[in-house]
Length: 381
Ligand SMILES: *Cc1c(COP(=O)(O)O)cnc(C)c1O
Image (cartoon, rainbow, N blue to C red; front, top):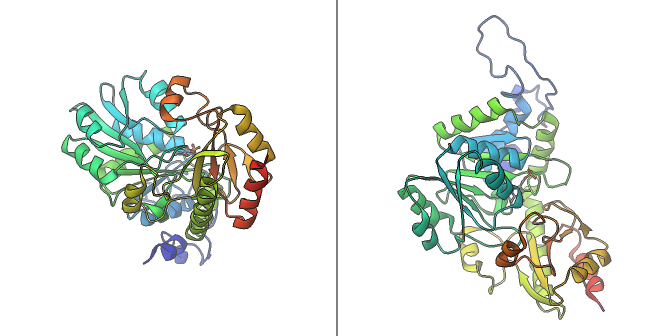
């Protein structure tokens, strides 16, 4: 079946749930045994819950995967994958322009626990060939990246990693399964912060993982149960509900972002626009091959490269809320320098192109005329 149909139906059989059309919220921590030693599908809600199981199966279908796993947040999902794949003495090679939370987890938690972390610019695959060794057990990719929408070649990098016996994980939050399927490109693990586009309404925190390999699934599921960072059934329900309109929302996010990128590109106050759909974007050709569309995030550098200019823009915008996060139905503006990347050393921000006068826009699904008018008035003299 096609994506839109699977997003609405996959993973849920209402015959098993009193014919309820929507997956019920199983608000229970425990399930009753019929007799001692009975084999039961659900026993205790940390180990498994029917609402969560429906979400996990749905995500697996959308990523063309055999297995899905849900966590209390995107970070809990990333943590479980890292713990399942790495032990002290192992090395992980990660993209340099990594999500701030993943950077913190790797450098402040995994590294002190004895895992070697190497950050690299992997937009050129040859950089991986130069760095990878027998010690490398995991390649951690993100594409597109935050906030400047860098792209890495998932298929090419996966080949190199596999030739050296390393697994490959991709944080595909910005793309969603509607725009990109990393497992089909050769990756072993795909991770999502469903908090963003998948749930899509800025009302839930949740993480998802999909894999094909049965043994790898068992290892991550073991951590899921052992550490217990699982989502509650209500959050699973909200995410399932969000996923049913993912294809509609993503198409509108993509349409609106294309219009915004084109508008801003010719604006006299804007120095540079970062959007994979623009032919001059460094990852444009790769994005055309690897993604079905270009996503809903647009970042800009203002000509006036100052915190004041970014702040003025954020304050003047009426539709766009100045907030962390992205991927909800409403438009948001983020000052990456002080917000999402506030904890990063200034030298590193400079290297990655994260400037005081730069902002990331999460383009919502409001009417495009209103979005453009808001930008126009906010950028006026
Ligand atoms: C938000 C985000 C995360 C973390 O997800 P939470 O649900 O906030 O824990 C991880 N990766 C990316 C790319 C994100 O945008």
